[in-house]
Image 1 (cartoon, one colour):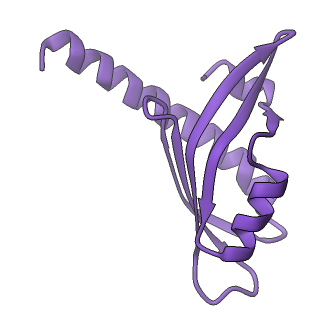
Image 2 (cartoon, one colour; image 1 turned 30 degrees about the vertical axis):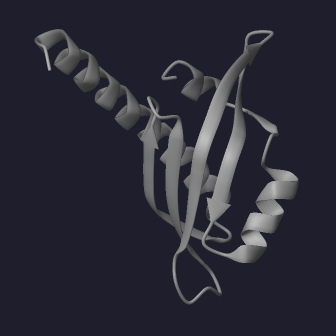
Length: 115
């Protein structure tokens, strides 16, 4: 790997880390009534997101893999579209297929700059 490839990867890693921090705060606020997020990993190059959640009433952690996502900009707003997703609970897979997969979600403006 050449020096320029290494620098590009290092910059991407820093960018992913900054995005993870912003998204972690954003999702933690949303999830607070339901439990906590214990892990978040974003790979913007592969367009994947890995989440682990400790939800109230669950005896073990929940894993959610966003296996493919796309970003779309429309009218100055940024949207995340989930193209492929799976969870460690069957009922969550069914819910994700109906309510999340192939849907667009507006990205808060304070996260848009990092993306």
